Length: 291
Image: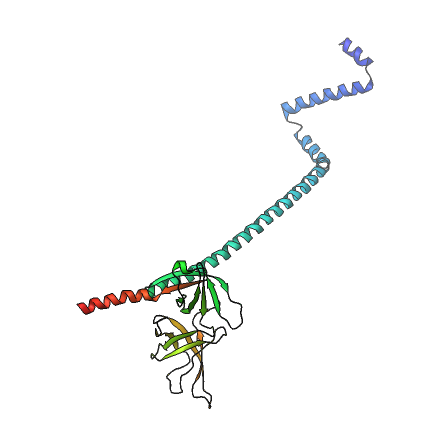
């Protein structure tokens, strides 16, 4: 003990204060551990020290918040860009689905027409449209190697489109109903009245001349191919009567009609072989006669 006191006596005041504080700290911890008497004091000290601790951690929290905000902003931009691209992709796919649906409906109508006529048919696509004024012609991707021939009728899902006027090995040219050189024998489906329908060189307009005032024809009458002339088989829709006029000085009526098919729409048509049906009908008729 004397040695300890001697050493303390020779120590500096700072060392003495540290040793005294250490002793008090150890004694305080022992008392608190055994008696729990310092709980109230601990609460008071924690309450008093909290503002200091809060202020000391405030810069770290601000930096963390700014960093998190920047990361969140970057993530939001990335997510937004990704969602925008996905939206555009889905929109383009939706438009493609609409286009495919329209094509599917158009092909169903074409195939339905094919089943109805029960003839040999060939699906062809447009590759070119004539740009010459007053000339209504189109080019198809089927030619003589596919059996296409001059004078062959061309239809679509609505009715008559025109007829082939030229063929090459891989392509063919079709004169549309509205071409000035086009003429199709037709009849009124309501009463069987026959006439010839001519192209006018104007889109969506056909002329039905040479009918007198006493002809039984009305606005709204549907004209179908009559089969006369041997080019177009009977029964294909061709046009609808839209206008009937008579000038006092004219012997014949002025009758304008509208093609049942939109000649400036669509990409597919059907090439048909009417003689196939005739070849099937003749043997059948002969069998009936023989019986």
